[in-house]
Amino acid sequence: MEPRLNALDTALKNEMNEHHFYKKNAERTKNTVGKAMFEQIAGEELEHYERLQQLAESWKKDKKWPETVPLKVNETAVRSIFGRAAQSCGKAAACGDSDDLNAVRTAIEFEAKGAAFYAELRDQSSDPKEKAFFGLLANIEHEHFSSLKDTEEYFVNPGGYFQKAESSGLDGA
Image (cartoon, rainbow, N blue to C red):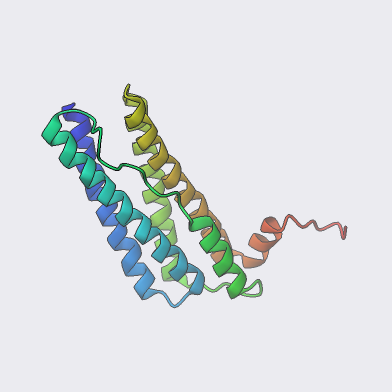
């Protein structure tokens, strides 16, 4: 019990740090794609923090996985947000600058670590509800990771990103 409660405390700190990071970068960037991505993920990280806070309070009080705390976490909308923003910015030129690219690369590291962390908590649990909750968080963090990798590719090579996204070939077909 104690190691998982300590892991929850770590998760709470990580989620709040990530929320602040994404919020700060959403305010900083002039890039439509980056702003949309950072705002969406900031909101999702705040939601994760709030659910984890409810969980930690209940778990510490009752010394077991809670029966009544609403622990559902919304699915991520980050992929659709990125797609719409990238379409609005266009194929011709990258919309991001080096600060945006550096922020996305830092975020990729956050999300990779977060996905692995929640997967480990899932795998250490024998409680089906706990396993499902941490599995969902791991999946969402992985989706953030994948979308941020797409954003990185878009910033570096927008034409290549759209070619891949549209599954177009170079054979003229």
